[in-house]
Image (cartoon, rainbow, N blue to C red):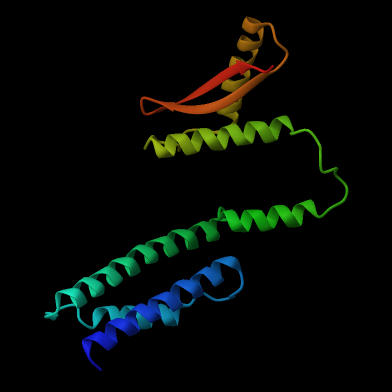
Length: 181
């Protein structure tokens, strides 16, 4: 088999692997396609040390290798999120199964705890995006600070409820509070 056929096989196998992984992450496949991944990696290593005389083929080969590496990082990150239970598609499925109970009405008002959890998650995510440590941040600590600022804002603006949101200014997450209209 020549270089051109090997690169075509590499590209086809990589596309098949991407589809298999998407099926795995959607839950259509029960097992991770590890065997196919090993085959694709073996194909990618075939011309690693050799000189490919055609520039176009060198470019295609290097592009496919880079694509494989970036997808492998994505798959590893997604697998880790699935193991930790933080993968969004898994959470979506859990919410659907959790909402299947007819005991609670669909159009209920959001609970204060739900709002506090959302603000806490937004704050932790903002700190992570700003490369700030999040190890010492607890939900209770954030809830205490929010309650203190909520009371102060309601007294200052003479209102019964306030709107909370997290913004990032100058590389630091900030809690913004304003009266609800």
